[in-house]
Amino acid sequence: MPRPQVHPTDTMLDAARDLLLKDGSRATIEAIADASGAPTGSIYHRFGSRDEFVARLWIRAVHRSQASFLAALEREDAKEAALGAAMSIIDFCEEHPADARLLVSFRREDLIRTIPRGPVADELEELNRPVERAVVDLARRLHGRRTRATLDRTLLAVFDLPYGGARRYLIAGVALPSTLRRDLTHAISAVIDQPG
Image (cartoon, rainbow, N blue to C red; front, side, top):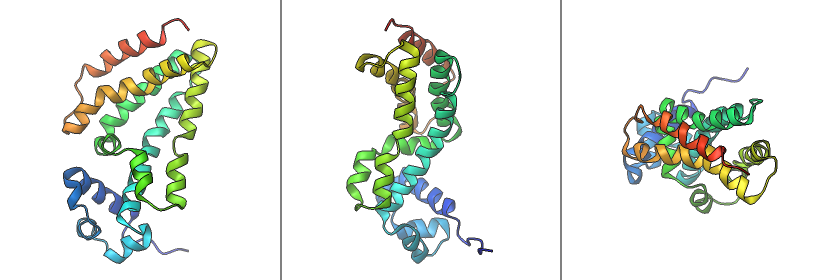
């Protein structure tokens, strides 16, 4: 039976996330070790470098956000699936504001450039494939076919509008307004309802 971790990985990642969001330049491995209570050597052993640590943190946040997004897309009715997926992003932003703020603060392409080739870089490269496939399928379900225009419209509805609507509040570190969900539902429905 494996020994339980004295310093859980999620505790380290949470400490790193909070430091990065407060003052990214101060989020050194040493500062993360102090904040999480983990020895510096333990962090280097699990993550290799600060850049890989940040990438792992970002990957964890993406997985958390994608789980409910993909689950919503499994609904039988295409419009309900689209609205559910879009609103799952707002739910994620409200339930996990620090992770959501992290996602709008870093770009995947920038993270890929900071780390060497290997498993973490490969995971970053493949991270969005399940969502990309699901959105292509949704575009077909909504519009009867998949074209560049229908795919762009679907991405606008289920991804760009919800993240765009939430982004400035996330960056400012304030709660999303109570009217945002209603306003986004109207905007998303208008985009989805456009003829193919």
